[in-house]
Image (cartoon, rainbow, N blue to C red; front, top):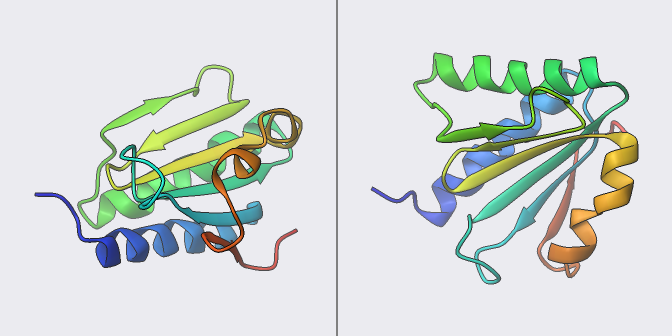
Amino acid sequence: MKATKQDAYQLAKKIAGVLDEKKGKDIVIIDLSEKSIIADYFVIASGRSTTAVKSLTDNVDEKLSKEGIEPLRRDGFSEAKWIAVDYGSVILHVFHEETREYYHLERLWADGANFEKFGDNE
């Protein structure tokens, strides 16, 4: 069963909250529901090192798994420059800072009205 948009938003906020607790940097939630069928939301965050990128992603996986929420797919763990985790209605992207600057997903998907900064970890 597909999650409602409200359920998807609550999951995105939960993911962003875990990232914020663990000192993820520049956390944003982007509403894709009117732009793509890929997912309803992207949650994007940065880590300062590949170790931080892996740790942030592992923490989200661990917290959500305790609630019975498992990812459909994961990619990027071997290099940890950009890890993507697909939770169906929400896709998590955790980038190494330099890789995030290079790909700049916000530029591709955000138009201002669908973009929300989360937390205070700049």
